[in-house]
Image (tube, rainbow, N blue to C red; front, side, top):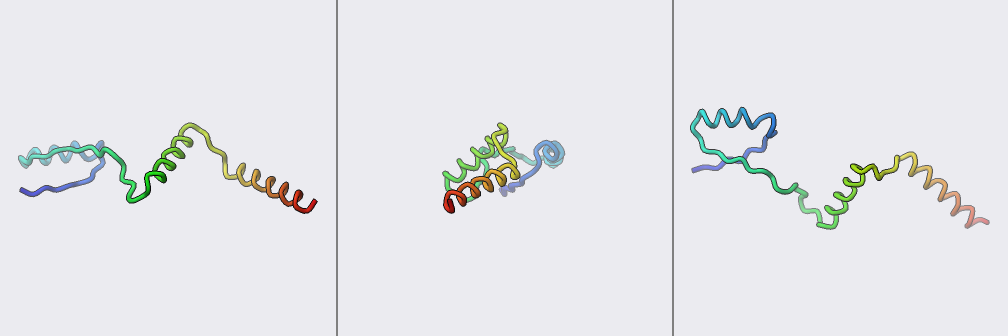
Length: 84
């Protein structure tokens, strides 16, 4: 017996693939991926990324323009404090 692993778009490709395999009389099993593949990233990095994605989904973000303007203002304040 030989096992073949194929990654597919479940909604788009699975029905057609099941039909073909059924017509060929082949046994098959559909396995759901339980967890995303994060490669060899440390767990702390994965948790940080997931927290950031949750922030984006919840709208807890600032635009690039806002952050740059905020940092420019902070730098001006620090320079004035240093020189004054």
